[in-house]
Length: 355
Image 1 (cartoon, helix red, strand yellow):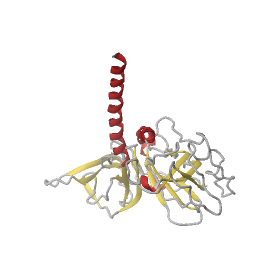
Image 2 (image 1 turned 180 degrees about the vertical axis):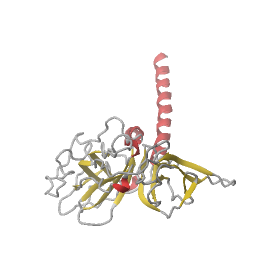
Image 3 (image 1 turned 90 degrees about the vertical axis):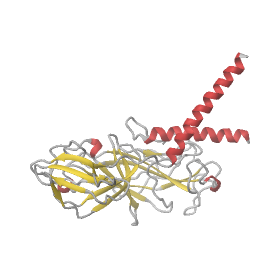
Image 4 (image 1 turned 90 degrees about the horizontal axis):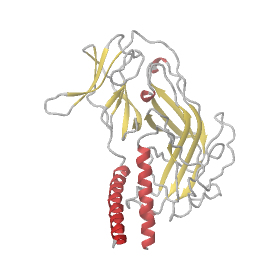
């Protein structure tokens, strides 16, 4: 009797954990809840250069935004969309750079948004104080060392079937770089704008990130990579793409040269388990399966010399090499993504055994 009881208890534990994990999976597939509205410079910042941008972090356009300096309203002539991304590892949001010009010296600032209540009140996004002026002390721009791009094909039957696949093709990106440093700006307050565009010209796709550690991205792992990455740009496998990173922070209006080097990469094509092979590009077919990470590392196809020289020969990896870089301090979404991926993979294996 004891063995069956232990089996029942184990089964109950598995069911309970499975329910918990699949609940998290449903939330993760939707991108999670957006973070609370905020603004940069962060609350409590002092000695802020008067040549600093104010950036509102909000999933929608900041209609009704107010800026006050020493109790006096500051005109806001509009805003510029920097792009979508993640702020401090939280859910997806948008970044809006306000058009307010130079900041007043030695002033106490507050940035507000209408609260939406019937009382006509407002919500304070940030409060900070400025320095007596600004200087042109340059920061250190980001240094790109590695870029890998993948486009993974999925079975059409799996689209919107509950495993986070919402199209026949999903993209994966990993980046290896030294983050920019700006004088007087904490690492988590540096606004990093990743700009990806075809090498021969075309539409630029932007992703905005703030965090204590550099953005790593997500590589396709296993025979059925779960597309949970926060940045999934549209990739054309017939084109080569180049990435650059700009930085916004304390004194950015006086130091416009905080742009990184430019790094280019080809798009590696893969197929998830059950999907047809990737389309043939230029007479050469893509990889038949993901084969682990399915990417390239170091001097493989994903990276090229930033001076525009010829790329190294393309090579797809067949094992776990070239996998996702997951050093400490990465964005909070990554742990959840891996948990969801393991749960969905287990569910797929269980379904296969039942069939």
